[in-house]
Length: 117
Image (cartoon, rainbow, N blue to C red; front, side, top):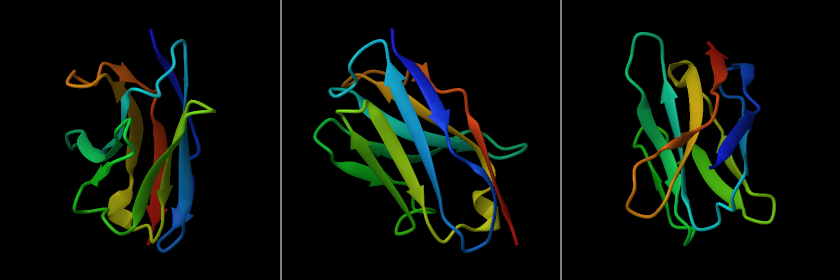
């Protein structure tokens, strides 16, 4: 089993930056694909970014160039650096983990990010 515990988030103004962290325990996740998702009020959960074990990354078009996903395997932690935040980035953000080819079946508890205009 993998447990994911998130930290970071909060209330910021448009243009500010935030960094979210997702610490994994219970099993090494260096071979896992780690992802970030978000869910805004009355909207479905959407993909934000992911990083594979090979450190290749992928981003949603809406955050490309502003968000950066990274991982520190020594700390079993994945980060989401969010720059140039916009009000439309307001959502609950979730980290998730999956093995190669599998579904995201491990999820963090979620953390609120609110961006005021």
